[in-house]
Image (cartoon, rainbow, N blue to C red):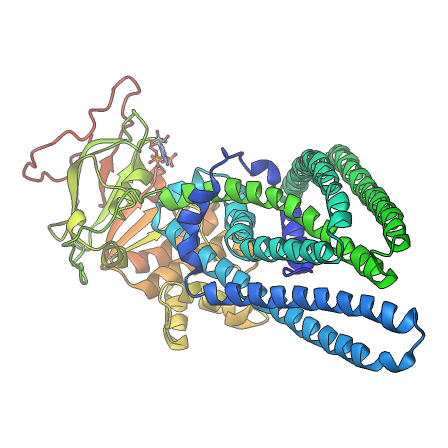
Length: 601
Ligand SMILES: Nc1ncnc2c1ncn2[C@@H]1O[C@H](COP(=O)(O)OP(=O)(O)OP(=O)(O)O)[C@@H](O)[C@H]1O
């Protein structure tokens, strides 16, 4: 009896194949208790479903027990005695039991799957929502494949322990008790003899489980390696073709593919062997039962129907015992998975809203950095030291400086992904630490160095700046960004898909979509992080004009190290990298000084 359908297992398997499994870092095993303590609360609201799953599955098992009993009865009272008249009542009862068992089994599968899927949905939402509260650096410092595995496979592994896994364990244990009890009821001495063979099943599943695990790990690792070769080769196709490296790349893929083939064959060898090995043991058990049974029948202690029913109980009992043995695998997977998910849930955001934080409202756009010093968590070297400058409403301030001087870090602090270790940042004279992060970020729009687009349409990507914006507003923003004429020439206009990460658009077009998005967002403070990166001079000149319209009337921090893109009359704040030898003095308290303009280290 299975209460969890195979499709979920195969789905999980195929998802594993599609992930770079070499990215799954090993986690130390943790106790089942810790997994339950952390994730049992997530079953709130679903426990009734799981309990119903257990009840229905037990009902189905009881029906099976009774049906086998009827089968024995028919053998003794109808087949052995050749009295056809005695057939109809037990046969009808058997049919009735089969219907009840079928309905109960369906209900058990359905409600358990419903509980399991809802659990997955809720837990995935919870972990993802938590991930969104962490600074982007948390995800950027980790391998994407590994994080995805945590949000998919690991969460499923946890569900298979605390949700459907628990249902399976309880119903399998109940089935073992029922089938063994029924066998004992027929002939306790025969049952004792055959029970002695049960450990054989446990031993064989243990021996195979260890080998299966090693083979599966090899298969996943080689699959990960093959996926990386594919991913790299496809992503770098222009380079591969321009350098005539196609044969070398094909050879690389073939090499990894061959390793994968060998790993799969090792798994096939084990699966192929496992079935017959179990079958041999089952045959041994059956022969033992028949031998003892014949002796008992000869002695008049057992009927033929009793012997057949006995054999049928054992035929159901052994797979149930095996399934109990295999549960150990589920437990170890869930323990490892839960450790990795707990690691995400335990990560605290570097910054949270203060209890008395107030909304910023719409600011005038007065931004001030006051002796701001900062080092990334866990780093001894400071990224910024005592940076002081002011940007007045509507003013353009150029943040210049060599690579590594801390220009992007400054933006992260302005958005409050982190707080300064010393000094303060002010918006309209209010310390950012006293404002809610959401309201602060409403006031600041960043145009990132790499234009970030989603795979929706042009309209979706512009409207991302202000969900709910009308089509007229989108078109107006698009006109300001100098994008409208181009969009009109597209086959589906504003509904044209931009491709993954906007790859169907040119660099300049992507940049204009981002400008239109920023125009629509209409925030008083604008940060342009190297807005001309990757654009040739002609395209940069074309983008400059709509950028100018976007900057008009807003406080703009323009990050650039290209003097050609510094607007005339703009004030320049030059950052210089903090020397490597200088050690950080963490959390040094700096008494605020009166602000001086245009001063920075
Ligand atoms: N997430 C991070 N964790 C730890 N250190 C970081 C992180 N991001 C940046 N740094 C370090 O902080 C310093 C400043 O980096 P930042 O990216 O702000 O420089 P930048 O001036 O923007 O450089 P570029 O012009 O090359 O983009 C560098 O030494 C960098 O190595």
